[in-house]
Length: 552
Image 1 (spheres, rainbow, N blue to C red):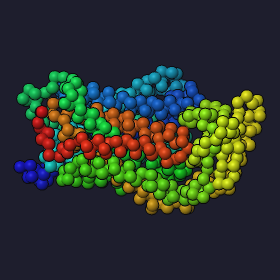
Image 2 (image 1 turned 90 degrees about the horizontal axis):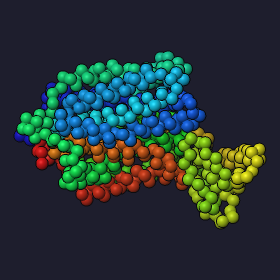
Image 3 (image 1 turned 180 degrees about the vertical axis):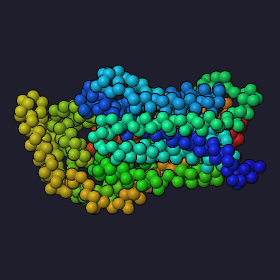
Image 4 (image 1 turned 135 degrees about the horizontal axis):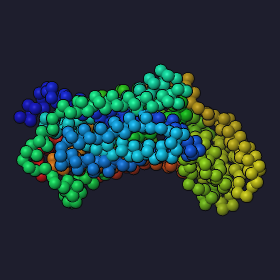
């Protein structure tokens, strides 16, 4: 019977379930990504009481708040989903997400209502994060519980495409609005249009979801009177289930998350910040790689029905661990060959007393460094130059060596403002001139970019994303019994993706800023993916043949 189900064509009801669940989830991701795509404009509209640098950072922190609260949404809505049903719970999540997004579009800015504007904005962002925390688990569970045995990987993999498609949709609506009304009008009022459009997407999603039936697994369990009365205590208060939740987090979703964020976000950040490719071109490269890679979500999801989920996810993590350093170095060579050549020929080395070197993470750009080490490193960080560190003696004044030329830094502590400014101008000028002489480009020369190789490398990184992400919804569903499935699978997924993944760009940036080496940020995803590979291989069991209708 299982074999027959696995080989029969998809029924109209199954197609409707997948389409409705995926469409709603695409719109949720659309809403979620709008904010990130428009962070610079939102900073000016809602945080204009601060200086420009701090306003942008607070806008990004509000964006991050949406990631941080996702696990709490997973707990709250997961509990509802296990108690009252999948259908009505993720109907509620899409209403919260859609209405929160629409309200951002009509929310008065800081100039109109003062400090109330950013407070309301952050509250709406928190609501969006909570809703997304409940949406994914509901959609994945709903589709899996409608899927025939032997096709769960194939069916749920469509849910895995939705984050990418939501990102595409948000960028298309923003680009279309910008093109139609112009940059000036868009910055003034046009940025609201993509948020307002979400009300139509919400109406479509709600209409479709209202016509859907409850999942057969939950309906069967409810008819038998076996629904959980306390899904939270069953999920996290009993060791037999809690240990599976912990394994799902560190043995699956943490590694999956860092590979996902490296392939779709960190690669873009690396192109623009480290390799100095202009933002529009970098976005086009990443978009093309996503178009190439997206079908592989379904391909690997389908393959996992045949050979298992675990081998594909573990292979994706292992490939990330083994290839990230050479792949990102190859990306440097392809996207900015002049920079790569300069790094090979004329290495930059900072020699300093480590005791006078501070932590270099300075996101607002407002911190004033006074030691010769900090000044030297800040100048190189500002120019996005990768460098090595050498230890100097206790009385060493820090210096920057570019090839064979050594440029001494200076100590600003105690200097009059005019003298400190003059030294700063002279030092920066000397560093800039010698970097130029050593072949370090101010930006990537687009005529020299190996476009085919850049896209091929980015497509490979997306391929790794599809390996770890395509089969994971089915595997998480299969790890937990029906009565507590929504709650149990949602929490490790959203801690993994909201925290381990969502914090990747910030953490990687801090590592690079501290060490000076532009590749060192990769240690974060490599270590996390390596941990997941080891723990997953040793302790996580294959799930493709599990009976998901069982309650034990």
